[in-house]
Amino acid sequence: MPISGTAELVPLLPYAPQLANLETEALELPNVQVLQVIYETDDRNMAEHLPPALHPTIPPTMHVIGWRAEDGPLGAFTLAMVRVGCRAAVRPRGLPTRVVCTEGAAAEALRERWGFPVTVGDAVLRERYDRVSIEVNDGGASVLAAQMIDPIPIGNGDLLYTAGMHLATVEREGETKPWLVQVDAEFQVSRADRGQSRIDAFDDAFWSAANLRPNYPIVASYTTANVTLPRIRYICDPEQPAFVGTVAL
Amino acid sequence: MRFGIFYEISVPRPWEDDIEHTVYHRCLEQVRVADEVGFHSVWAVEHHFLEEYSHCSAPELFLTACAMQTKQIRVGHGIVVCVPQFNHPIRAAERAAVLDILSDGRLEFGTGRSATWTELGGMDANPDETKETWDEYTRTIPQMWTNERYGYEGRAFRMPTRAVLPKPYQKPHPPMWVAVSSPGTETDAAERGMGSLGLTFGGFAEQEQKVNAYRRRIQDCEPVGAFVNENVATVNFLYCHPDNEVGVQTGSRLTGSFAYLAALLLPVREVHPTRSYPNPGLLAASRQQAAQNPGEGASAPEGVCIGNPDRLIEEIKKWEACGVDQINFLLNALETIPQEQVLDSLRLFGEEVMPHFRDDAAPAAAERELAGAAGSGD
Image (cartoon, rainbow over all chains, first blue to last red):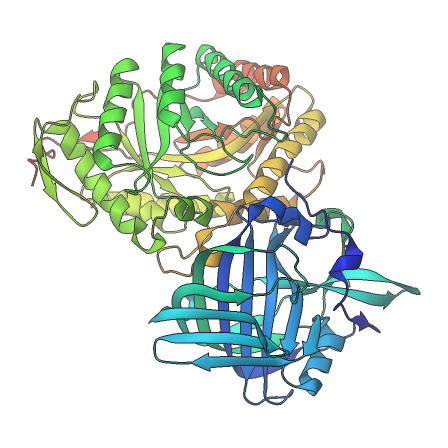
């Protein structure tokens, strides 16, 4: 039978937020630069990064994502995120393990309204003529350095972004417990490039992803998009298979 | 209407000592029964690295075994991956010719290019280039078969003039097909005068549109081979049982398992944005179907051939009305259905469903011979 996640919830929770409710309204962030660097990862422990609700992809993957928002309702901010590629039943998804955001107000909104496992920190997204990079430093040490190299233009419709499954503690119907909150952000892309993936630094402990090892580059993309963070429509019990544990709100 | 069986060869975990041996030999037993019952063809995919979903990486060997153990049933490459990192075109032509000889001229030759990063990445192939290489293969392989010697200078490969041997037993060569998983690929098949080997599970309306587009376009085709193979085949599931409810329930386990496995793989489009793969193809269609039928529910989706003979006859009549010439059936996934039940299903289908449909050995529309179409090599 297909491989399912085997992770205990507690180790996955250190950066998981607590949501007082799930009544979030959609919010559009205009003209966000979005970098996505995709790698295959070491398969030996691929089930250990996911709760039982989710399946690893074949082969296992990780997504390094950078956002730079220069204006909009949350103000200017830069964000770096690491996700484990996965499936919720038959749906393509990504499980964020940790997010670093440069601005406290934006981080708070992302955390409290959509369940991003976000902390405030030092993230920089840089665009050069031949590459785009996302870097995160912590206490003077590089904990993430990922790049898209040698970009070539692609069609705006060629990209497919997968929804996130954000692990959060949720107060719901008188009970407080962990849920996977489905965040299927919409990306209205106005410009897109594709290039080679490269990860030069990745501290798995910092990213709350022990033994997650990027080992084979797939591809990277860089877009400008209006990103709409959605109203939350589905949550999923992290300890049951998604096809039985998903709840429509 | 003709009927085929279609193999992914799905092997469930745990992969204990003899599970692959067991599954392969169960498949061969099913093929023998299908031959006795009167199925037209057995198709086998070429897939690599697709854990549990498909352990069918050397279909030409499996199909050779099928041919050796049967008398009538045709053997279909469904499909040969036409990407140099998977198969050199000369080797593809040679192997197919040998299979055609050993099967006494029963080969159907399907072509395609893979739709997953799981496979293309594993073989270090560039997804941007597969459409081009597939196109070159479809134009050069029939030339290798029909010319005593052949030479070629192209983008995917080149070869000085050589005799590619042996030649196929069927003259001028076996019928050629194109795997159709993305919308629009049916017109690629028609442009080249090739059969449309459908690999997705669409509904009747979608299929009728595809068939109409295919029939229109093939009238003005530029055949890549020596004749036009005007045929539309679709893929479906088969579980036939005297009790409709049992048939639908059991068959739903099959469709659900298959779709669930497909969903775990990485379609090219999900991780490698490219115009070469505008749609996720088979995998997305499978997911969609699973989403409609995620558990063991007892409703059969439109057109899916699970249930009792009466229901299957009704559904197949609708496919026939859409213009479909052939349906190829998946019989199992993850060994969800015990072998004896699979065999009983095949026999019941042969006894009670097949007699309601005419098996045209040479459909009127098909295989229009084009004298002299097999020109000399470059």
